[in-house]
Length: 241
Image (tube, rainbow, N blue to C red; front, side, top):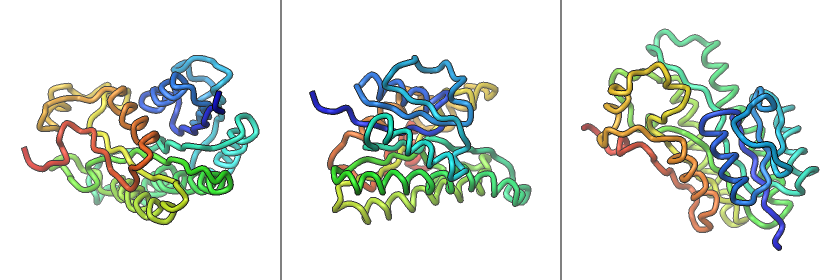
């Protein structure tokens, strides 16, 4: 039997992240799951093929422990899913520098800390790899009344760096892609009216966690796809409706 591949998943304690952990475990991967309190999560089953690491992804020490856990416990890092992220809306003029620092720490610094370690390990293994990050169609397609300028500054940075890393390491077989979900039925939207959420896409649909999980798994295993943005948003990125 071939040696199982190892995937790291950030923001793994609930919602999309937990769904991604379960999906990869079911497909036979070893999984290192991390978030601030992932050890207390009951969103995925206990298993010898799942290792959990608590920590703030904006802290480089967390990235070090996550990467070392993957290598010491399972022997490799073959894929990374940068799912951890924070997002909140307010008028542009009301965002504070403290808001920016919090958004940047999780959305950008967290990406850099762990992705650098993953790429270094993939280069050493000489067998390629996959990095998939979660962004949003709002980067390129703002919606009137949904004011998220500063969060989009950080999410847009993930889009930009992903395309550049995809080109930089293409010849090494390391593929870098993003999934851009629209509205997803997660705890983030538990207090939002469903009719309003359906109005945010021309299809009038709300994605469920499995829709996003399927997209992440596809890009992780699509051996000839890199530098791609896969919108899972009911057509919201197409324009006005």
